[in-house]
Image 1 (cartoon, rainbow, N blue to C red):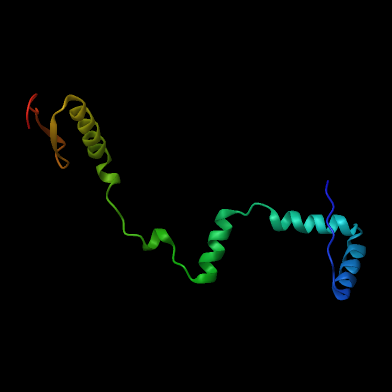
Image 2 (tube, rainbow, N blue to C red):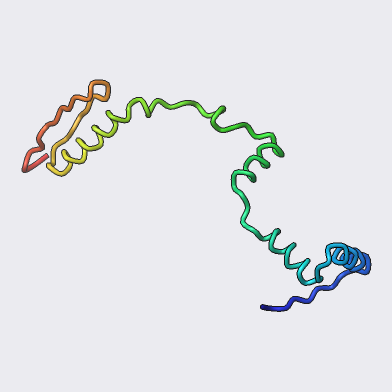
Length: 112
């Protein structure tokens, strides 16, 4: 354990002495407890809520525009897989997301 020396104004020292005698702890224990609480990891959710309240920030879920990606997840995954397989084969791929149909054109072995 390391030691720390600090300078206190007479007023702060008097208030510290009164508080440690009231709590029946040593000055060291009191200061250690204060430092532990001040340096403890903060609850991210609580900090976010405090910042929103303090700065008048809106809830992101309420202000963000909804996307419809969740409705098309299956088609998007199918498209990504088909593109990957076509790239491995050397084909060009066009996919209609609405129907999920694949239109592949084999790329010529030589030339463009």
